[in-house]
Image 1 (tube, rainbow, N blue to C red):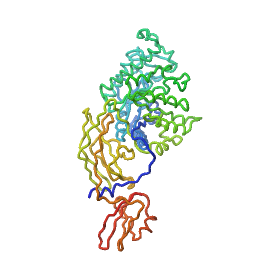
Image 2 (cartoon, helix red, strand yellow):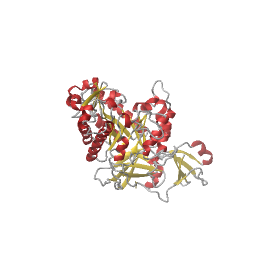
Image 3 (spheres, rainbow, N blue to C red):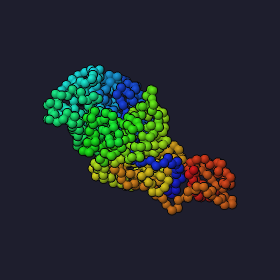
Image 4 (cartoon, one colour):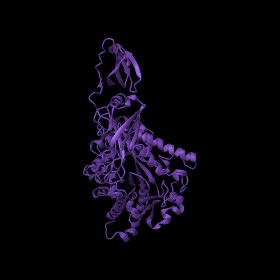
Amino acid sequence: MKILILSILFAVGFISAGAQPKTEIRATWLTTLGGLDWPRKKAFSDAGTAAQKKELTDQLDQLKAAHFNTVLFQTRLRGDVVYPSAIEPFSECLTGHTGAAPHYDPLKFAIEECHKRGMELHAWIVCIPIGNKRQVGLHKSQSVVKKQPGLCKLFNGTWYLDPGNPGTADYLSRIVKEIVTRYDIDGIHLDYIRYPEKGERFPDRNTYRKYGHGQELGQWRRNNLTQIVRRIYTDVKTLKPWIKVSSSPIGKYNDTNRYSSYGWNAYDMVYQDAQQWLEEGILDALFPMMYFRENQFYPFALDWQENKHGRWIVPGLGIYFLHSDPTDWNLDEVVRQIHFTRTIGLDGQAYFRNRYLMENTQGLTDELKMNFYTYPAVVPPMTWADSVAPTTPLHPALKIQGDSIVFKWNPSTDNTGNRVYYRIYASNTYPVDIRDPKNLILMRTDECRYTYVSEYPWLQRIYWAVTAVDRFGNESAPSPFNRREENEPAIIDKQLPDIPEGHVLIVSDATGREVFRTANPSDDLPDRLGSGFFRFSLLAPDGTTTLIGVSVR
């Protein structure tokens, strides 16, 4: 009987938008520096705090609606942070005053709200820059320039940590470990892990004399950055091996045999050897800043793809060029880049920056929702760290309560001993295919319970299943809540039901509410049935009613 009820309540039709991947990283850089993306309002009162929180959740709601799954949340800005730290002061972006604490923990709040929406939060750390003279002045005695002046260099009016000083790796590691131990983040994202532009003139000769040990200067600088990445990666994995460690290097690694970088590349100009980081396995993902077009984009995207070494490459797309005034970029440029990254087998896309997604610049967000991100996608499993899926959820059960359905199941276990979370799938066909992204109903729940409420009958489904996912992204086999039975009513498509003499056809909607009755379905049904899910029942002369089929139109 329950199977019959579910057939009536949860059938659905859908419009195919073409093949889309179920596993794909869809990320955005959410910039807090200067409130560029968030927060635009300062939290210096309870009302300001509420407004600041709402501003963030509104943005996250828009990202969820566009089926994004990763937020690169700027956590360390320029020697200051957006969480209560024992190492660096609060950023002025939160309250308007450097060092002033808001009435809440913004990082904790952002993590919780991302997880509620099935999205990951990666703490975005700006590594080497400390800030210009004004910014460092605002930090006062809390500035690293004051607290550890031996680590800092002034170059072209801006303060930087000196990558050649071993204390820099120690200092950045302390910041990262503070975040990792205190917060349920999904990733650490290292930005500006490089020397500044015109880095050949960086004032580190004294450091080089002390620590260079006869190495060529350029290679020594590259080794310094590699050592910092290696140190952070090792420290993170020691504490929480499921946390993803990534970075955003310059988009052109070096000249390729296909095309020249015309003098601007990561390897020679700012001493980033990001492909070495991949080869050594001291990063899980790269988000190269590929804010270029035409031949400055495509050959270098191929170069990253050919040097992945089994890790993820997620090109950063410069969507801010769609907004520049004057601009010679149009939406087609970004569309071609998304097509290309999928075609050559890269692992997703990232967008700089979030404002232009929120403003739907040149219709970009609409384009993503209609053509590229029509269905949800999940972050791929990090199989090089762990490839064992959790146990399948046991004893799934459901209960229909009015227009909603309540699901329950027993907890799964994981080989690591860590907690797992769950995904819910649904389909009109049995068994539910969890490989198809259009069947993904709920990206993430930490509880063994879920209540589904459909606002629209035509979005309801018949068959339901649950899977367990570990912190590395490995997913269990599905556990079905209901199964197809031989006596279920037929799906009526184009063939209208025959009505015996003296009988009346009753047409009802997905909730069981009668829509209309007819003794002449061939005349009435084509004109009176719209889109949605309907059930057909025969009313016999003796008053008995028999369900004869359902229809998805």
